[in-house]
Image 1 (tube, rainbow, N blue to C red):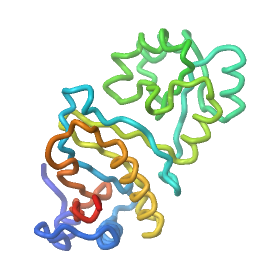
Image 2 (image 1 turned 180 degrees about the vertical axis):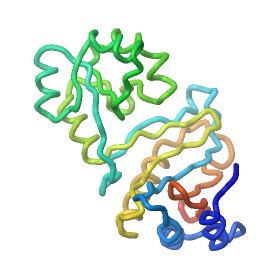
Image 3 (image 1 turned 90 degrees about the horizontal axis):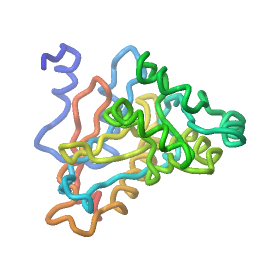
Image 4 (image 1 turned 180 degrees about the horizontal axis):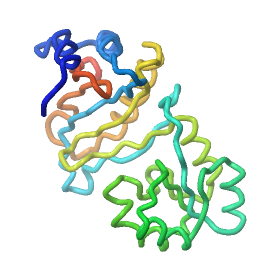
Length: 231
């Protein structure tokens, strides 16, 4: 992958041989976020899990204390009073079966999170091939299959993020924007790491966290000192 001149200059500021303390890593990532837009700060956690085994899957959600800095569009699948409740709670889109052809045939995906009441999962399941690969399928573990749609919407709007292993056993999550203060990013990062440590499967052999890298959208990755994160 060809990188631009700005990336090359930023990469020179990162010592690949060093595992940085959290505060130093955040300062470096912020300094290197020099794009014309407010870059997202992401964390990539390489785990020792084997996601092929169900008991070693990691999946859950956590509310970041300072949010993600992103406006999240929420689609809720619900009917009757629950649909009214979702509207009142501030859902961006609310619907039922009538949304299936719009998503399946017209490719409508103007939303970031999908919430569904349990009785609607039969309908949502028909969209599995579209929503699944995009990580948009509602899931009870992430709190997105629930009768309490108000709570789900409020938490998502407040900065709730979902984390899960990808096929390479890595977790990729945003922890804020480059415009956040170092303290805000540190709080969000610590909240995420606490949740990841709590989610450790008991069957993992060897190191649970193999590497933790922080980067902005356009900037180089900065490796963190895993030993300090685990203690």
